[in-house]
Length: 146
Image 1 (cartoon, one colour):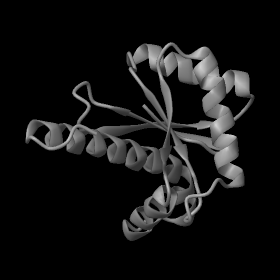
Image 2 (image 1 turned 135 degrees about the horizontal axis):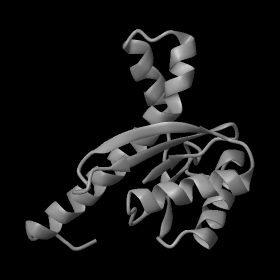
Image 3 (image 1 turned 60 degrees about the vertical axis):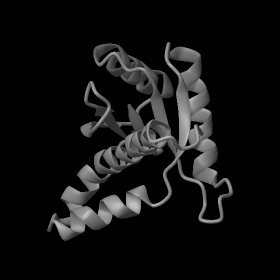
Image 4 (image 1 turned 180 degrees about the vertical axis):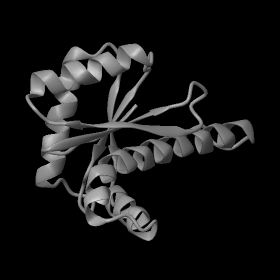
């Protein structure tokens, strides 16, 4: 499962059972941290999630930003409540790419605003799944095990 963390909304995506493709879930409108985490816990249980990836919006130079500190704190709170690993994952430009894709698809500004967090979570998760697949391919083809 991937989480595109935001202060007002949280984009959510899950993978198919084989871990090949990412599918978006309805965007979570933030209310209270306790309720947000309970909602995510319910999804983890419903989909039998094995790992949660939280997007870490680090800066272009690879340094922490104000939002990355919020994401790290949210990930810490998730680790305390979930029964599966929670990992931060570099999400640089996923929201920018999501907005570009939605704009190119001809969606109005209002519809883009409604969909961008879900699409960003899908891009984040697909990037992570592709990374895992490339590592597995390297090992299978005799490459170094990293």
